[in-house]
Image 1 (cartoon, rainbow, N blue to C red):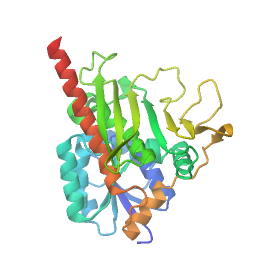
Image 2: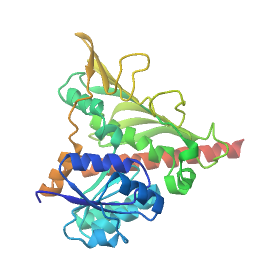
Image 3: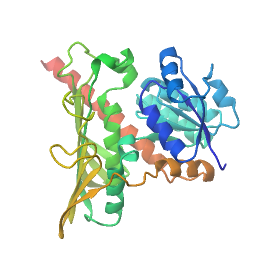
Length: 347
């Protein structure tokens, strides 16, 4: 397959545009899209002129010239789209979260194993961020020694008035740790080289949005990596919908990676009161401190995924890590909600 044709099924989140960009920049062709919502479809056609709107997703699944289905549909519906597409012989790329329950995860894993198709989740805070990619290169080269601790921060701007109703429905968006924190969990696995992680603690809350009672606007988790069956690096993840209106970007996403011989800090989208632009990487080691502008770092995810589709390989992301990041996020979500329910009973 020298050129991959793909179709978007479900365009409810703006992340669909990043998914499309990653693929088209790598040479793939957007062959069509399906959306139930006329307003979303109109905006999509205005952005991607000439791309046909399908009246039924089965048209994508039945088209033998289409090799890949992508989706940023309502979060709770992505698993069903993926299963249908894989059983029709298509590879799949989902926006995160790929699943909103452990039952969905089990069903998607079963379909993937049954069909042998690729199921990829585009964890964009890794795969679309040059600083994250560059950090991976440095750590693989031994720049900070063995990773011993990671702190991942994922603040987001809520834009409450602009969000659709499903965004505030727990059953449809999956909870804040399932949703946003899956980014940071995937990075924790990637940078530590862990096969799994114990969840030492997890919490969620609605602090600032009582008018949206099912929204969780802050959450965190504490992890311990498991590598070769033994405990390894620790990690703390905090995500929230608290980005103030005055910040000129949607979130001050940061990642600090502590190693035995130095540390790396990423200021992904902004360096507050510091250097302009994005993708700031700071490396401190025995030689001193340096700032690396990673904004021009090539992003390999799109080209690698297309190569995987062609060669039936796993270079963009190992299948197990794609699933494991969601498994840990979903378990942390359940842990946090159970703890919150217990606290309410005690109170």
